[in-house]
Length: 80
View (cartoon, rainbow, N blue to C red):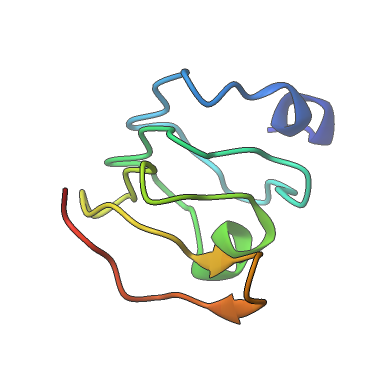
């Protein structure tokens, strides 16, 4: 995925099963996105992107990777 593609990702887009190997996600907005089953997506990559409690993570859980309001990692997830 090119950096331009990462910038254009919409939170309403379903990315289930997408491959993210080598993707630069520093400007990606995954708030509310469905990433379930995404492949080659690392925690470091997810840590660069915006996520929220509505984000479905690759393992199927819901939650934040990084809480930008508090500036802390939020690796625990809450299932809605």
